[in-house]
Length: 286
Image 1 (cartoon, rainbow, N blue to C red):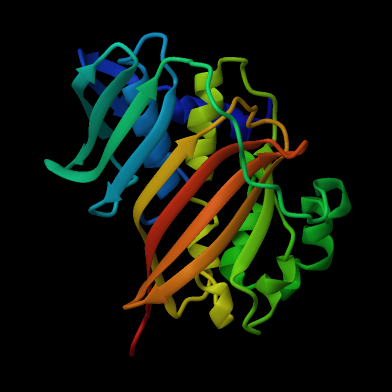
Image 2 (image 1 turned 90 degrees about the vertical axis):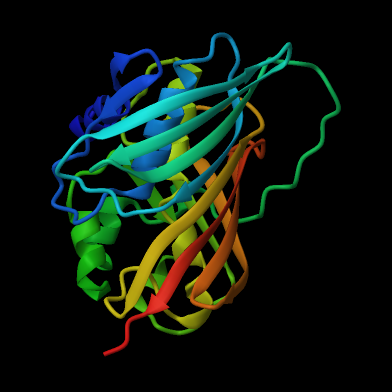
C-alpha cells in the first residue's frame, strides 16, 4: 500500500470521542482550506459507524464555511430514524464552535427489485490514456502552475482524464468531462471503506466540468471556486481500487454558480453511483 493511500485511510479513520461524536484530522499538505471531498468522506464514515448492517444509498451535503486544516474537525451524528428498511442520519461538522458542513445520509437494507441503468459512454479506456508518468514527462510544463503542483506530489488517487488537453488550452470545450479514477494502492475489502473513498473522490473534478465550456478551470488564479452542495447515490457494489469511469456533464451555469452531474461506472459498464453538485465559479475582479 502506498504511503498516500495509507494516509487517506488514516484520515478516514475517525477517532470516537463519545456516543455519536467523532474527531477527524486533515493532512498536512499546506492547503489554505480543507478539501471538500475529505469532509464528505469523513462525515460518511461518522454516519456509517452509527448504523449496523445497512449500507448507505444516498447522501446530501451543504458546505457552509471553509474548513481550517490546522485544527481537527468534530463530527456530531444525529440518529434521526431506524425503520424496518431504512435508517437516516444527520451529521454536522464543527470547527471554532461553528458548523462548517452538514450532511443527511440514508441507509437501506439489501433488497431484490427492478433493475435498469444508463449506458456507459464510449470513451478510451484507462490503458489507452497517458499514465501519470507520461503526463509528468510530456504535458506537465504546459499546465498552469497550480496543476503542476497537484501532479507533482504523491496522491492517494490516480486520475486519467480523457480530455486532458483541456488543462493546457483555454479554448471553450463541450460541456462534458470524463476521467478514470482509482486509488494508487490496494484497499481493505470492507465495502464501507470503498464507499467512503469514492465519496472523497467524487468532489475532485465536478466543479471543473462547469468551467470547461468557458475555457477555464479551477486551477485558473482568476477563478474563485468552491463547492456549495453535493449529492451522491450508491447503486451497486464496486471497488475504489479498481478503475472507475467518472462521466460528467454540466447542464447549466449562471449567477456565478455552476451545476454539474456525474455517473460512475465500472470498466464492465456497470453503473455504481451518481453524483450532482452546484459550486461557486466566481471570476475574481480587481
